[in-house]
Image (cartoon, rainbow, N blue to C red; front, side):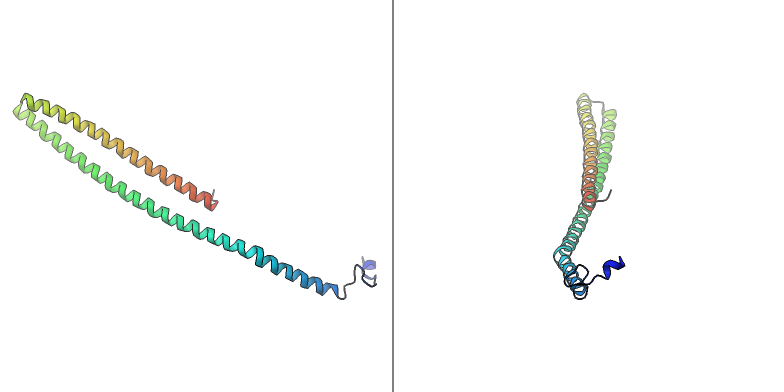
Length: 151
């Protein structure tokens, strides 16, 4: 190795008198070029992507909060309807026992069947509404985590 370094001659392989600083300047220009034209735009795209993902995440959180709020109001409304229907059923039963009229008895059974049907329908809708919100939140969370590459 020492022998190769001691070889001198014009335009030789190890003629480092003027070529080493020139190679250093070339390397510096190459690094600056790669940094400005390749690395910097990629960093900007990455920042834009992160801002886009965070904005979408905030929007989905707002939507989910609104949906959970609606679900809470809907459940309160269903509970209130259930309470009112129970009271109505109790009053109809009381009238039926007091008056024991055939027409009232038929009316009572019709209304009772209607209320039973409406209770079933209310609970089915409640279940559908809950599962749809749950599935929507799961799908949105999966999409967000896939965009963020979180596993």
